[in-house]
Structure formats: structure tokens, C-alpha cells
Image 1: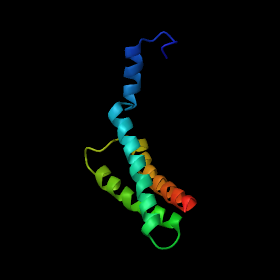
Image 2 (image 1 turned 180 degrees about the vertical axis):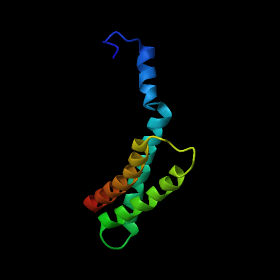
Image 3 (image 1 turned 135 degrees about the vertical axis):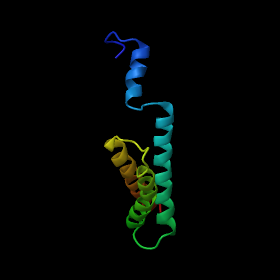
Length: 103
């Protein structure tokens, strides 16, 4: 974008439109790490298939996001809602998969 003649301030303003800010990026990475940890722990201590335990842990972790998204001040962007739910579920399944592969 800078090569197209825009200034650095314009580029940062453009990225800010999509909530690509440092707190959002840190929140995203912490959410992914939390989901991986949920899947790992549920696979380590749960009975049955590790992947199914990770899926259940992801659904339970996503329930917190569902409650928070029912708040009237939640994000109006549906992509954030769907992304927040999918990160928890797929991250937990990935954590359980990693646990299964390392054991």
C-alpha cells in the first residue's frame, strides 16, 4: 500500500478499519492458545477419543463467547461472531489432536 503512493498513516488507518490493532491481535493469539490448551487438557484427562474430548471442550469454551455475544454491546460484525466460535472449537480439536500425536 505504501508502494501505491499512500502514506504510512493512511495504511495504519486502513488497517484500523478492520480492527487489526495490537489489542485485537493479542486477543486473537491468546484465544488460540487458550483453545489449544483446552483441547490438550481435555484429551489428557478425558475418557474416550481425544478428538471427541477436544470437540466437547471447544463447545464448552465457545459457550462463554456465546454468552458474551448476546450482550447488547457486542460486535455487530457477523464475521467476528463466527470467527470467535470457530477459533474455540477448531483450536480445541487441534490441541486434542496434538496431544494424541505426541502420546
